[in-house]
Amino acid sequence: MTGTSRAPRPATDGLEIASGDLQVVARVVQLLRLLAGNETIDLVSAAEELGVGKSTAHRYLASMENHGLLQRRDRNHYEFGVLLAELGTMALSRLGVLDLAGPVMEDISARVRHTIVLSVWNGTCPVVAQVREDSSRTAHVSIAVGSHLGPNAAQTLVFWAFQSESYYRFRDVAPPVNATEAELDEVRRTGIAFRKSPRDGVSAVATPIRDPAGRVVATLAAVDIAQFVPEETDSPVARALLSGAETISQRMVTP
Image 1 (tube, rainbow, N blue to C red):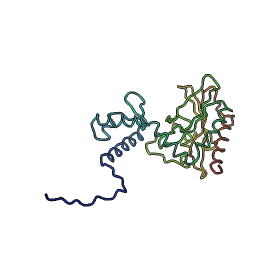
Image 2: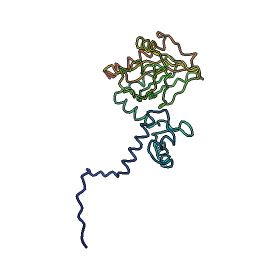
Image 3: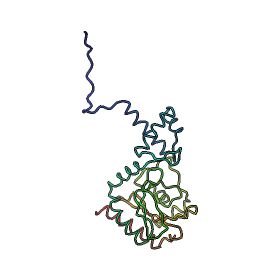
Image 4: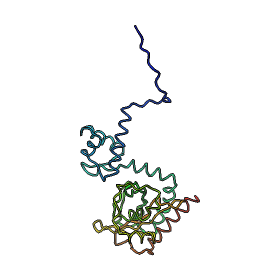
């Protein structure tokens, strides 16, 4: 029998990756980028984006949901899953923000009796990264880690007001904040943003947290039933948030 000689295979440092696996990764990234530019994705948009049939697109969506990359908003629509929020939180924790913020948030929540929320920017909107829930009243506000905040949120107002000083990149597809330039100027002047949601009966007060370089890396907010949240920039709640954000920033410099 005549043997067939083969050229030596390129070195892979002991690691061989099937081309099919690389295609899977590329398609997952495609879907995540599609979602980053939209509030949700569905089976039809996923199939069109990947150029595949609906059955193939469904397998991708189901697998991404099983692994926490996606979660269902309703029966037909998917949004970012908790794993992505956890990964973003891990990246932010390298700055020490989350570890430093926890005790400060506990203290503020106990003093002002509101739920305290720390949010980060994901390129298009704020995402809740840490929560200290107030349970001193029977009726109180509960917010899940990983929640995406809309253009009417106080935290969104803070991130947009200080966009030029942000630690994050703002994607072109980011929905603009629902605020006038005068409102943004007021936030820059006072460091405090207010927002009330008549539909939900909830109000929020927010302020920026800065890293040692002065860049805005997160927002600190008090959230509660509207009637319990004062809207003055010198209220005890606003002062507690400003003081807490400053404490976190200083401890990032001197742990």
